Image 1 (cartoon, rainbow, N blue to C red):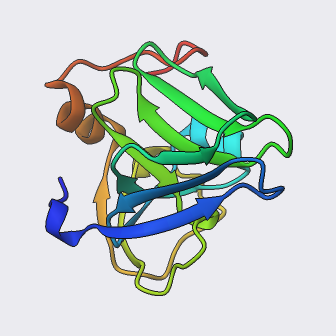
Image 2: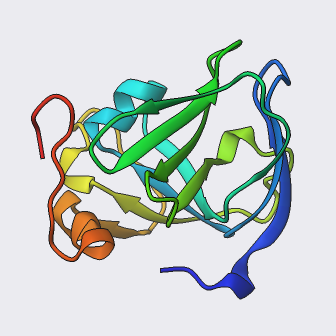
Length: 151
């Protein structure tokens, strides 16, 4: 999906500062419109694909298993939504809003576009992928089931 040469060293933290990290992340932002991300963040989850972070302080870091194949990491103190990762650790994304510097971030893609509600739209021209296309890209056409039974 993304190439390592497009990754930049970044730092970030949660709202209260209890979870601090550094990582290498892409510059291309992805907006996830899946129902789970929208419920978790209150809107589209704006993320950058990244390498596993190095935590300076992670005592407050909590994980929630949101499906058979993915986890969501957040601050147990302030509740900030920070990371989405595959449970096997192969793929990570970081919330763009948790980063200290976003100056070179560019809107690249919208995923689970078929789950996006009609009441909002982004003006940017981006790559758009349906949920089935995203799942196929990550799992060779195995479509995981969400906790609510949806696919």
